[in-house]
Length: 86
Image 1 (cartoon, rainbow, N blue to C red):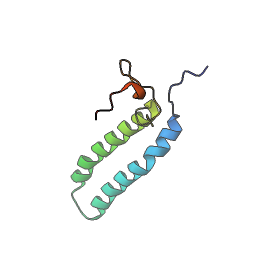
Image 2: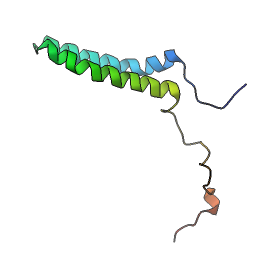
Image 3: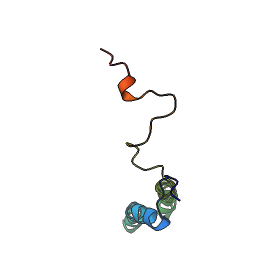
């Protein structure tokens, strides 16, 4: 039964987010190898992880999808009934 809802598997969502997470972790490692205080790494890593989790949830939950072909919201008129405005 197809409900018409957008759904992406967990694995696919993880594969979409993995490059961004890898860049963030590489940035933290680069800062640590440059000799910055390790506290900076611990301060930078949580936002990187939080944004990665939010991105995974957005992709997995369908928030980040192509909405061009969606039906218009209820209460709106079709394009042919709209006032041309000229």
